[in-house]
Amino acid sequence: MIQRFQTLFMSFSIISLVVIIVNFPILINNTDKYYIENFPLIKYIMLASVFLTTYSIFQYKKLKRQRLLVSFSRLIITIGIILIVVLYKKDYDLELGFYLLLIPFIFLLISDFLIKKDQKLIKSADRIR
Image 1: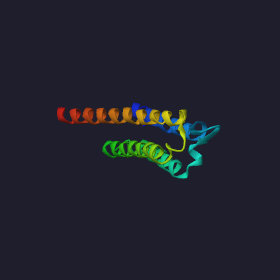
Image 2: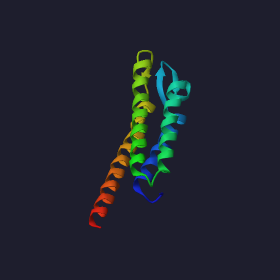
Image 3: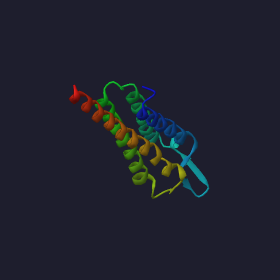
Image 4: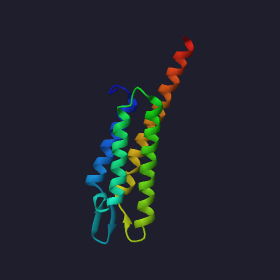
């Protein structure tokens, strides 16, 4: 479980998303900085992505389910980013934390690619037998 590359990238995604939620402002208005914690809807959406990714790490024996969970987690991050733009862009300016939300998305994209690679490897090993 831990030694697989996709697990590492999923862990990086979880860590980076939690750090972004806590430390980096996503919006700014004149002199005030707003963190994800100030927007409950966005915060719960991002935390759902964290929990889904954490659950998918423990689904290492079921690659199909793990890949589906990672895809849902990516979709949730995308929905969160779109909601930030649609709901808050007109009143606030985007800050560094908003752009950093792409990092966990990219980590999940890489882990999805690696899960797919593992699935192909298992299928090819089954063909040989």
